[in-house]
Structure formats: structure tokens, C-alpha cells
Image: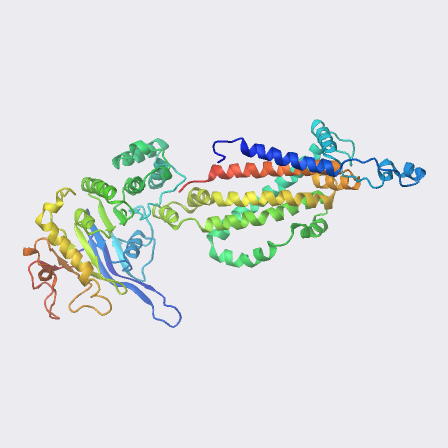
Length: 280
Length: 316
């Protein structure tokens, strides 16, 4: 159906967007509210609050204007609480990549060992089962107390939440390498190290990449919450700061950027995954 | 006691039984020998442990009892001396045809340069008619081509012995015939020693010098060794004109259909698993299968005496 009309789906997307923006616009139309408080008090608390019934929810136009502001000047730095959204996103991405990278360095080799040795698997399984379902944020106080550095604590939280999917997927991928392929390596007297790198790793690579993709997705979810807690820099802190400023337009802009970056992260790992996928 | 090139002595495989039950003995008392340059096929119903025997020969599996000696050395693990062609071809799907063969060649001759490895591997792929498909991935090849790559990979390491586990089982009849011809000509040219599992009686007669008949499991054993007495320069297109062909074929089918279950459990009267009777049904007159194979021997009679001229006993 959509085969011969490839423009149909994008068109429908645009229609959905238009309907959504239209409803949003209708919902936030500014009605000139009458001043319901004492004029002197109104002057004191500011015009916005003085309009009483009017909400702080911006219309689509306000958000687009705000977005444009952010896009044209993403890297300004006017002190602790006023940095460009590009700088904030940069901090978050850096934390995610460092935490994720460290987790990969631990999870892939450890997953290899677990996958190759049923004994180690059985020995570590209870720990993994208990540690895996813990919300990464629950580690935060422990991390802050022991590490005594909010930035490193945030990275630790990312590390912890990225670890499990990669660990479990690597172990599963390694354990389910086809017996035949291992037998081929054995009959050809291929050394254990060469077998690990030239048979098991490529055979398990698609499963490992799937684990990485899940991990990076979770890491990007968690970083926002983590930064709301630790503060200082990052997109999570930005969102919380703008909540304190009651600048909903800024929050919506930040939400859109978070979604965008998450999509880019996911897509790049999906692409890497396709590069190592083989057809049997 | 003559030493065969490959000597299997008293091989047995038992699996520990579930709680309170006896061990399950798949086969025991397996004795046979294969000479250098000989092509041996093993035939038997599913579950008699053929693949286990092959895996023990390959060094991939451990027997519960018995030893296997090849070229004067006991087999204790996998070795480049024995090339294996797996039932499901077992090619590494992320490597091209050429790289799959190179994988083994590099392991066999670690000192070779990349160029030497490639030239050697290419030669063996050309031998199985895959010179045009060097850089294709296994997923782009047909089933027959994949199995050819598996054969090339096994031949390329120039093993002392080739082990084939039902290599053509998954192929259609036409492809199977073509690859059988190819294998036949390669083996005839290289005088490769081969041990092969098959379910196909015709395939066994075409390829083998001798056919080991296995009785049904559990307690499977080598029931008989059938020598294929037809001249070695056989071809698939003419073999069935040889008068021996149907005599051998009838004998094999008769064994598989009627007699393979007789050996289970208690040993058949007069059957000595250490010296399974060697029969040559191809030479028997009139093709009377029953005549050829009957082997009631009074106990304690001289080993070399056999009631029919076409029946003798393997002397180990």
C-alpha cells in the first residue's frame, strides 16, 4: 500500500504534528485576564502572576522562539546558572559516554568469562540477579559518600546502569555460540586466544551490540535524573533549574533536545550493530 | 597382531543413568581397523552411536572405555592430523569462503605468509569447483556449495585422515550425486584415508572400500564388515551395471531392515565383537544373501574356519 506512495507516511506524520500543535495552540491561547489582585501587589509580584488565571504554559510560538534562541546560541556561558543548552548537553553526553565506556570495559570481558564458564556463571548469578533490578539512583547516596565528588558519582551511576544489559547479553551471546563453530576451531587446533577473538567474539558480536544499545538507552534515561540530583551542570540540572525559574518553554526545549540526542545515540549503536551482524 | 593405520579397540560409550537406573550403554566392544588410503563407511540406524564414534576419532568426545590409535599414537584430543567435515557444514558465517579455508590453513602452517596461505586455500577451493566463489559469504552459497567449502577446508590442512559425518545428508539427490563424484575423484587422486558416516547405502557402495555395519543401540556393536570388492575406478553412472553391485546392495539393505536388531542386548551366538566377520557379498554366487551371511559357528572352533568360502574373519 505504502510501497508505491512513499510520501504517504511522512505526510501523515506532518498531519499528526499539525493537529498536535493546533490543539496545543488552542489550549494555551492567551485570554486577556483581568487583574484580580490589588494593583500594588501585582506590581510587586510581576505581571505574569498578576494575570491570575493565566497559566505559565507557553504556546507553540513561544517554544519555537525559545528553541531558535537555543539553536542560534547554544554555547554561551554567563555563570553557573546560565549556560547555553549545548554546553549542558555536552556535559551530559560526556558523562554518559564515560560511564558507558567504563561499563563496556568491565562488562564485555566479564561477560566473556561468565559465558565461557558455567561455574563462574552459577557463582555470579545470584549477585547479578539481586544487583540488576536496583534503580541506579539508589546508588547515588552511597556513591556521593564514598567518592565525595558529585560529577564522578553521576558517572558511577551511569556505569552501574549500563553494566547489566551489556554483561548479561555478552554472557548469553558467548554461551550460545554454536557448538559446531567451536568444534571447528578445536579440530583445527586453533589456540584458545585465537578462538576467543576470531570465533566467539564475532559470533557473539550481534548479541553484545544489542546489549550495548539497551545500555546506552538506559544511561541516557538515567543521566537526566542523576543530574537533577547532583546539580551543577548537565541537561538534567538545566531542566530542574528552569523548573525553578518556571520557564516552561525552556523545559520543553530541553525535552526535545533530550529526545533528539537519545535518538542519535540509539541510531549510531544500531548502525554499529548492523555492521557486525552476519547472515547464517 | 597386525597394526592397522587406525586401530579402534574396545570402544564403549555409557551415559550415567538417571537416579536409581542403570547406566545407558550406547555401544561397547567396538573393534575395527582402517588401513592407510582406505575409505571406510559406517552404516547403522539412528541412535547406534555412529556420530559418537566419529567424534571420538576426531578427539571431540571421550569414550567411556577403549582406545583409538592412529599411526602409532593414541588419540587424546582434537588434532590437525584428522580433518572433520561436519554434518551441518559448520562454516563461520561472517567469513568469506576463502577466509573460512584460510582459517584452518593458517593454523596448520603458522609460519606461512599471507600470500602462501591464500594461494594454498585458493587451490583447494578450485579443486572443489568453487574458484568463482572465493569472496562470497556462506549465506550466499547453496547447500551443496557450502558443503564443498567444508570439504575443501578439511582437505586443505592435508590431514592424515578425513572424518565425514553424513556430509551429504541435507543435500538434494542431484547435488549429492555431483559432490559424491567429486569426492570420489579427489580421494582417488590423493589416496586419502577416510572414515565416513552415511545413511545412504548407494553412497557407501560407491565410495567405500569397506563398510562397517552397526547393529542397533543400545549395546550397539560392529555386526559385520562388508568389503566392497568392485574395482576401485567406479563411477556413479556405471556402477549399477556391475553384477556385484546389487549383491552388495541387497546384503546391506537386508542387514538394515531385517538383521540389525538381532544383535541388541545379548550377544548373538557365535558373534565375536573383537573379530567382526568380514563378508564379501559381491563375490557370493547367485546373490543369496542368507547364504553369505549366516554365521553359526560352534563355540571354540578354530577362528579361521568359516562355513562359507565368502566369509572370513578379521584377524586383528
